[in-house]
Structures are given as C-alpha cells and as structure tokens.
Amino acid sequence: MKDILQFSYLENSVYKNRDSIPYKFIALGDNVFTMEGNFGNYWRYGGIEGQSFIDDNNLGFVDPSGGPFISIDNARINNRPIKKIYIKFSKVHLET
Image (cartoon, rainbow, N blue to C red):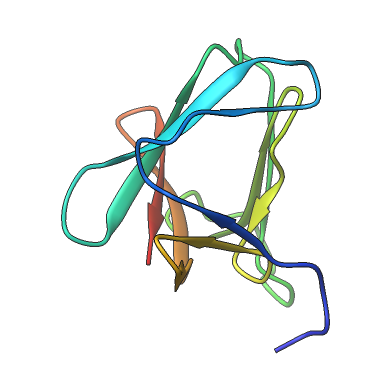
C-alpha cells in the first residue's frame, strides 16, 4: 500500500465537502455503499493505474464537484478499505 493520507467515513454520518455541500455514504448491501449529496452533474473519475482505458466497472477514483476525492488507496467506510469503485444505474458504488 502506498504511503498516502487515509480518510475514514461512517455510513449515514453527514460530512461537508470543500464547498460546504453535505454528503453521506448510504449502504446498499453488506459491503456496498453509494454517496448521496447535491454534487450536481460534475464528477471526475479515472481508471486504475496501468489500465489501457477507463472501465466504469473498475475505477481507480471518483471526485464529485467540491469533493471528496475517493480512491481505492485513500478511503475507508466503517473502518473497511474501499476495494472497488464502479458506476451502476448512474450512481457511484463503493465496495469494501
């Protein structure tokens, strides 16, 4: 694991991003979460290092307008590391 800053979140707790927009992580299953917040339609996302193309089913990071920047290497939910990020039904899914 890379030596980077780790962020830890709890499901259903409300956080504010750098634009003071509230957001939270909602459980969709035992180890699957989505982010809810009024981020608008502006999101950055990218693939995993070494991939030859961006695969919406296997992302390396997501970054909604105003944050938070979430990557496989830098975030945990309920003290479990994020292992997979993907887009399904137009929503970002985070697996721990």
